[in-house]
Length: 451
Image (tube, rainbow, N blue to C red):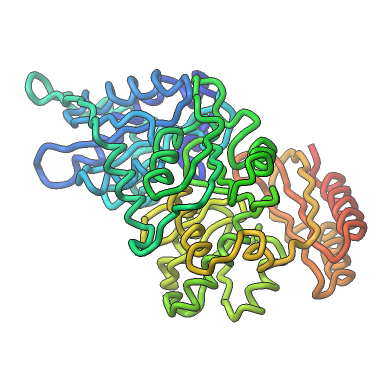
């Protein structure tokens, strides 16, 4: 068996290896076994999920595996991933498991793990769980009689999470008089999001809030904002907010129907925190995939941009290492560390709305904080993944492109973490130059290592 865990848990097509009921049962047993390393007492693991039809199958298998090891299960049902991290911490459970494939289509599913502190599980624990999953724990005694674990549902979990989110919005502010369109992507925010923004005073128009197990992320949500943009213009709303399937990402649309990326939102919120003296070191953490315009704007605003590898895990690591309170990715996955231990689309939306309320400015005006540099990306299928710096032809091509761009853009060539693919990205001053250089570089990559 190959590596089970990727950069964000286990993921694949549901009911196909590795995302089978058998694997989920083994993973549940292994996670429970690792949790029992702690002092002798009754142990508990929280399980939540998004709205995929395969969630029922995997939830049942995980529950069976965990209880078979003498550990109790708390079932919270469909809830955003960050909500499960919160419930795990607040219930003082030993771990939290999230059944979700985030922004992927419905046929995929995945399992993410949180520690008792609400942070993603440490690498050492993840490695141990992977090894135990593969071994099947054949040498571990199975509990019997009263020592077998129990499972029960936590009916008020969603209500607790809603209160938690609302408490991150300043008490002296209100959303009264504001019209908001929500696109919940037929995913895990479909219940929580309309309640939160309505209770804070906004007029809420909700779309794609009717999950059927098959329509999650289908032409909706944070990756597909056409419907949201149209609805904002049609209803003359002040803002549109789109969430992905598990609710840890958020993309905003201004009152004119123009989409703002996570780069825009990070800068808007970081500038507001800086103005209030609440941005330690004037630091905001992003990834290598942030638009070139982000770095230009950050310099102009007097912000320091910390640059982490792609993945919220690495963003969070850098934030904790350097004492940052805000960080995220252009995809809309943002972490406000003073409010939560992980990325939360609902909390991100509330922080953006707070800036709008405090400044009295429409989102279109706030969105002028950065100019987006033309960007082009080509994905090249590869047969293997040798170190790119060891291939002279590719390095010469990169040096030539960087020389032509100067300080007006950049080149980024990296392997996908989950697919046999090399991503070739160029940002430059014009569409023509960006397109030409990207095609040229992709051609060299394909010639050298293409499948």
